[in-house]
Image (cartoon, rainbow, N blue to C red; front, side, top):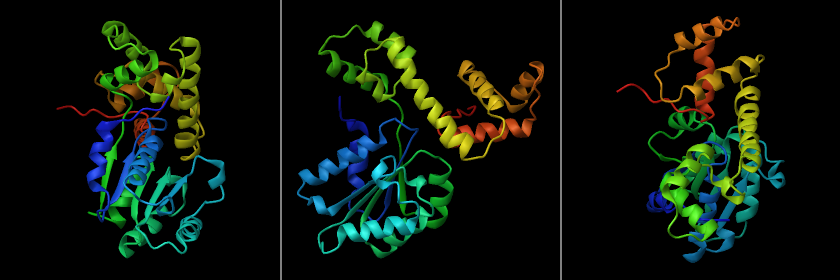
Length: 274
């Protein structure tokens, strides 16, 4: 099942063909790739030739050999060879390309193409972008489905135009807002294995492997605590004390580091006190 997310598309389209990099950030599987596809479809419908849109998705095996910014640049030049129309470069999961900032900065400075990228790491798409192309990018944060979007997805899946709002809200609270779950029957046996697969991927690729962590057990216990206490006031000192009470002491500094890693992977979001 494929559905639009017009709330995001309407925010992004006004920035097309403007000299700024469009950066779409969000946790894995929230629908960033689909947004790029929708924008590409919009360009094609507007009359842009297929040759005018270069689309690199680092999650696809065909792009596995593209490891560095130099590899990506060679592919981009090859794609646009002999083409003189407007150029658009879409790169999905750009943080998987080493030195991608140099590629984006160079194309932007040259006015080579209109650039849209997505990423699943908050740190890469804030600190490094801000230093290399400060003032020349705009970020769009993508989140899981809102309840209004959930209802639209469910209406498309079930064909019911007058849904049981209370029942749907209970399902929404239980299963969350990742768009991919709507491809399955909404039962624990189907949805939870799918969600656990995404969770494991984020934990392994974006946290444990990226930061070379040697004690993932502490990390997983921290995550369970944060999830169980969603909406409650939490401090690093309280978390450190919790680990100590469980006979597995963790320093305040390590707790802070772990929470930072989880925030970078966009697995948790910090709501500061007002």
